[in-house]
Length: 194
Ligand SMILES: [Zn+2]
Ligand SMILES: [Zn+2]
Image (cartoon, rainbow, N blue to C red):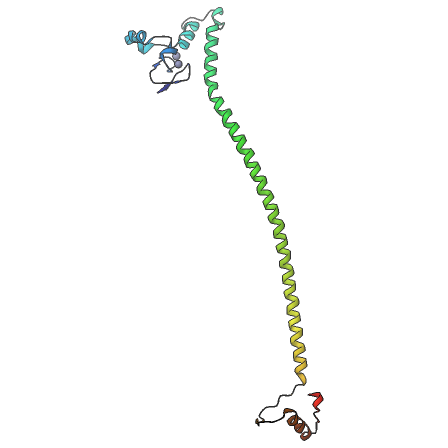
């Protein structure tokens, strides 16, 4: 398959110009298939309509007269056709640009969404961080209070007396024993103080 140099269509059977090396289908070449076959060896020097026109207007060997420099309507048409062939891919580019534009707009939307989400996450994180600070300050207070309670407990027990090694007798009265001990060491232990 080759692309026709005139109509830009992909064609399976085409002939090649010996000058510009472009391919043309028979419809665009300006010669019939039979006519082309009849050329025989001269097929190798066949030129397309564009090259024929430019050859006629330049006349190699001698400088062209002033009048032939004026572009003919045909050559203008041919140039226009060439240009339109060259512009064909532009439509594709325009379509691509349209698609890219849409993609960019979609991306922008999703980016905005992400930014909003990020914003809300940041706010929530701030709340969590504040709570963490509160928790750590509360922990400090609890530690202080525990230390104070411990100190007070120690202070409360500073006047406690622990008596060990007294054998247990059934039916004994602890208060009586303590009162007796108090009287022995001449330090009266009143029941109301125990
Ligand atoms: Zn063609
Ligand atoms: Zn040609």
